[in-house]
Length: 538
Image (cartoon, rainbow, N blue to C red; front, side, top):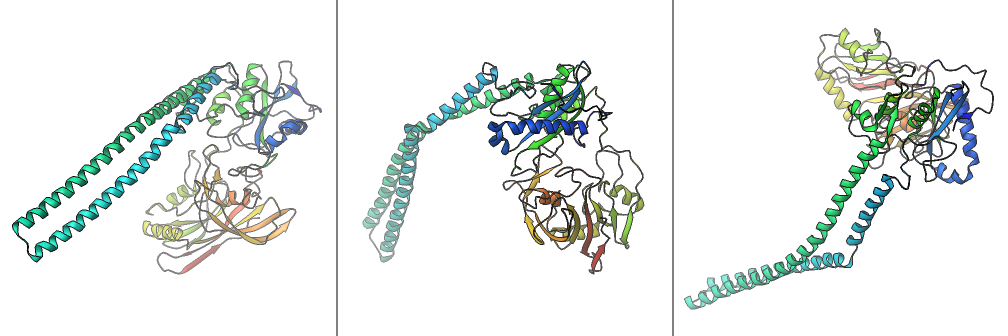
């Protein structure tokens, strides 16, 4: 499991702190370990078809008890139908153990599924449903036919009465009416009784199906809870905590399915149990890009938020970890005001500055304008830019102007132009990207493409320059979804060319090369069309 490096690493300086797993640049030792894992995977021909669909792998560079530096490797979930492979560290808990409680209870649940399917497809069940459908149609036809017959008879009696009839004749008409209604009721009751009998028979079978489904639900919940209890994690101090305990500490609901099965927790667990000193870590993707999220073969990615963040926050206790780049020391912000009058202003937000206050105490555009214009009313911030994106932000000094500008955004009358530098050369000079977007709950703050749950998002683009296998473009977003331009650029169904410096959807760099460079809007007071533009920063 602990692999020595095939080539000497003595000339590579050891990291001073362990990798912050949610935002990092891979250490040279992690890069070398990754190359060796990639070389190993390339020899496993029997896995290539499965791996082509994509899987996350991880490496952990560590020092063994004798002081020798090597690395551990892991994969997320299963590989080739099992959790155990000699080259990779074992799972925290092996769900595939045939004699374990998980497999036994899984067989019980599977038996319930089979029984539900057997009953649902039985001849008796299907016959009853068909007979009920036919009986219901017959009853509806009978009711409609009798209602028409009764209505026609009534019309005929009314016509006779208007023409003049004797008391005896009127009595006969009354008896006719009573007879028709009684006969209608008799036939309807007979049909309804037969239908009710069939429905009761069907209800008995469906009650059995529902009882089985409830039993399945109860067993599944109990199995999940019992399974969570089997996942016991260590931290660097030797302390332990169950999966449920970790999520309770983080004041989160029950752990999501698959929690604890990712590469990073496996690597740290094995290192702690075998007294290896963790030095650095990285996770990378092998295979084709998925349909929804952005993953590129051979690229490195941070640990996932939904499943791994609470676990890793516990497991990293006792290690000297790099500081989070998201918890920068607060400093006073001085923004460039590009355009201003008594109603509104446009500021030029630098990359790395928040539009509105976040969890940290870092200053934001909102805090800057609120301090500078204490008499302003309303929310002030009309729209937002990602923290990593630089460029123009529109600010309203009163709530009336804010409402008017918000309405322009809703009606898509505000035009924005972004300039971006992409990692690849685009073949087309211009085009459009229409891909629906929604949050990726397992990898917040990332977004994902989803035809089922995503909201409509449309972007037009225009190539400005191609140089050194890169492309500079103008982006024109027609909608304003979170991370719209970044995801439309990076996704395989979009341009498949991430914006340079996009650490969420591409490769980290000195900055995110995306700038909100021009904005056009109607002045909320004068109605005059205003265009504000700054020079491209790159």
